[in-house]
Image (tube, rainbow, N blue to C red):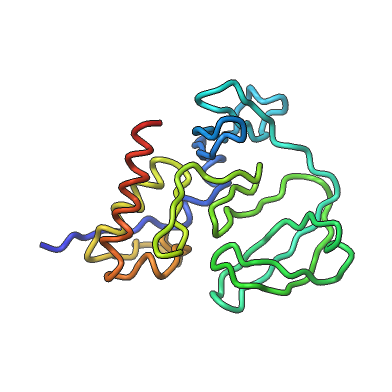
Amino acid sequence: MSQRFVDEPGEPYSFYYVLRSGGQVYVACPACGEAAEILMKAEAEDCGKGLLRCLSCAYRAIEPDKGLRYAASGVCDACGLWFNEAVADAGRITHKNAHVACPNCGADQQVPLRKLPGGRVFGSVSAEGTDPMFGLPLYFRDRYKGTPIWALNRRHLNYLIDYISADLRVKPNGPTLRAASYRLPKELKLAKNRSGVLKVLMRLKQRSNRT
């Protein structure tokens, strides 16, 4: 019997949407390597800032203040998705254009460099699974035949398992054109890769259960 899955509308698993919705993102603690959570909470020194705290050791950090910042944004020529990436390399910010790797597919792109006032950089999780706020690797990440697989948290991981497991994937109803699976690499969506991708996701699920 075919397993049917109705996709979720919009982009409920984008990094900043998860945080603004009161969720958390799990990354590897820079001190001990165990799970640490990023969240936005009033206990941070400035309300609305990101807070990083390890679940195993005493490591804590507040989202750093940004001074003058630079960003490279555009539509990727390879995958057609829009991106907005921070550029911090002093050797690159003197040019009008910047070479950056598309965070969605990894393709090298040359796009205009914009100078922006200080503040939060609303970037995306990189294709390799690094968070845009603290620059740390996500705790739930792995690879399948060279393609990165990552999840922001347990809910995101469960969504990926349900989506990949389905024989029939249905787009959500409503005016929203995009679904939650929109940014998944096409290699992970192929039926021939289903069993292999699921094995990787279940390994991450076991890690989730130990957290």
